[in-house]
Image (cartoon, rainbow, N blue to C red; front, side, top):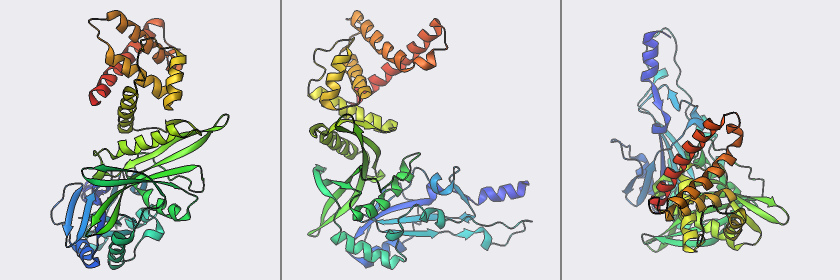
Length: 406
């Protein structure tokens, strides 16, 4: 590629994470919603920007990932001023895909010796969207939003409610045995592609899934209106001899609602459901992110501390005691041990009780060695001790970080 062509390619490349604008739209007036769609963002707005225009409320934010649609580089070629607008009705998630640009390379005169073609923008995105949710025009979408703002009600069984900053929120329990929810799930599952790295669509023909959705509930001029906040998918495995093992798979709160405690509310509800339901043996998590791990650690530790689960424990803690706490609170064994180690560290005073700290250090190091026995097997004794010591130092630092969040 010659220098002139390379420079041209660079000038016409767009970061799709920045180009995609997601909007949650509500409003009782179709005319107001339509006006809000026709207003171009002349100034760059902040992420999670909230605007109100003649009765239309619009919350705007960007995706974290778009490689599922536009490739690993998350870039498209051939446009300037590109905006890929994904408008969602806040409750039903009826969808309008609308692309805008100021210039397109195959519509421009050029002196280059080759013909350059702009990338297809809409087809890759449409493959990720629910076909039945797509509206064919702004007018149709505006009508759907106005009707949904007044009439949409969440699917499933309402199983929990809570209040945050004087606003009510509700959690609903769903399964794929409900055809209506299967269709709704096709709308919400697109969000996991935007925010969970490595996410895949799940098999909605498998009725072992339970899906918990969270909605914001607002009173707008005497009418109840719902907005989608987030959701969690939970798979139910067989657990010998006659129970089920619950496993959290996908867990997402949309960016405008993050940092407000909704993830903790949803996790605590699911954990409490598992704990009080005899058919469940425990609650596990599939490939959790670091942020989810932090949230889970905070909530599990608060629960266990509130119930005095660690009372009288000193290192080393035997397997029978670990099993007893695990069975009572229905955590995974690994999470139970992690919480015990954090709790023991919380009570330690290295300076005043060095012998207790030594016992704690040995207790944690034995666990580290056992979990990494295969990778350590090829090292000599000195190298093994050094690696385990390094791991312990990192674990201890992380536990202090978790304790600072409680």
